[in-house]
Image (cartoon, rainbow, N blue to C red; front, side, top):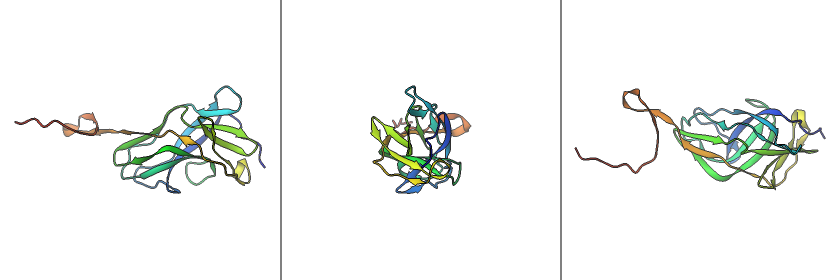
Amino acid sequence: MAAPITYPFDCWMGLQVAGAEVSGVGYVRRSAHFEDIGDGVTAANVASVQWPPCGSDWGAIDTVNLYGALTGGNLLCTGVTISVVRGSLYDVLRVSAGGYQVINTTFGLLATSGGNIGTPYDAGPYGDGPYEMEPPSVLLFRTFGSVALCGNQPGVWAPGPFDVVAA
């Protein structure tokens, strides 16, 4: 079994729908930097991690993974979303700073949220295979992205209802 990962560390966050990584238009894993939160054991993402606006329907996202590479690479850790988040056209998805926490163990990384222990992975350069435990919860936010309005003026895409003014 490999030694625990040392803090700070850099990795890539990826989104998953029903066991498969998102493959919709515009999707790409996003870089994340984790640092010790002060207890010598727990680390969290230092900055907010945000994906580009969905260029298509990305589906009902239920998992946020940490990987060792931008593409391919080893799965380092996984956590389920607190609630399923649908990534629809123009939506922007993000995990706020501190929204993904991990603890370092002899098994590798464990994702944790609200005291719930997550799934450690002992894979690739960090170990020799997954060690399963109950997945944690990760808070994934969905907002509406900026769009160009008529006349190419910036605006914010927002849901209705809209007032209709008679001419």
